[in-house]
Length: 446
Image (cartoon, rainbow, N blue to C red; front, top):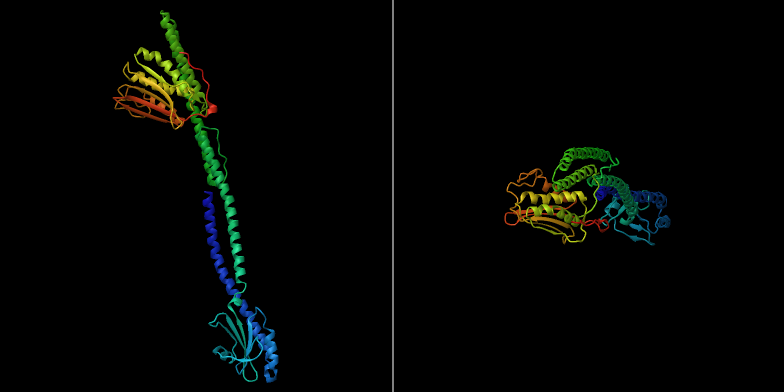
């Protein structure tokens, strides 16, 4: 934008200066020629006035020669005197005969004039009346170089003025462009911070009125988003809080069971449910920008261990390949846990009992982390649509969407392949976290 602004200013200034300076250059050339011609005319008239009395008698030829010689000097127009008999008294000593031109004949009639000969330059002719032997003519010849002397200097001055004006215009345009670009970039920076989840970011109204208007509207939008997200978090927290009452009732019911082993098992499940509800409340009240890092491999191993008893009850072979190396990804641990639970839960709920499945975590050649949950079941139903809240298996349809959003919110990808012969494979990729952010996490103990 700044470069475009400078180019536009330079082009506009150049066009305006061209429209002004081209006529000025022509005017200076014409003015120089007129000035030189006027000086030559004044010189010719002075010589004619000075030689008038001297040429009245034939004995004053020497005086005429001295007068003509005195007005001729180096770099001055050549002044000569053409006598009535055709003799020319010029800048060089001596006398010689010259061809009498039509211009001289016209001047002898008593007319003083200026004309441009075919050889270039200008000549000024002034008659001297009353000279012995006929009318004499004072002739001043101005060369082309003398006629336009000083024109180049004037042109250089004008060119310098033009360049100076262009530079001043570019300087002013650069300052103005820097102000506009700076205000625009700061506005874009605020928008980037909002997009990254910093809902406290606000734009400073600056620059032209249009940018100030955009900054004000962006601030209003940020405030509105903050209000909506706060309301959404509070609603989610309230909803999760309502679950505590039925969970407490389940715990009390479990304590009344006569089978102590069964009561203990149900109590453990209810405690896990209570922890999940508490996690939902904490997550709902957590600021949107909080994005800690979690160890994908450790979380995958833990959730595989958690679901292993249920898989064994259903006669499933569960394979976990996560390695022992830490694989940090920019996803909160509870979000990562929810995504893996959703994928494993889909396998356990929507494939026949005895169907094996596997969980794998690896680092791709591109440097990203990949989580894969695959089963050997019949594949997704034909009615499956990759839309939130839509399912072909009679469920809510939110499981895969939770996994997809978890990957995409972290800057990763979600992919799913399914057919009746090879089963279903869901892959989530995540960008790797920097080395200094790698979380330390104790291994689960079975």
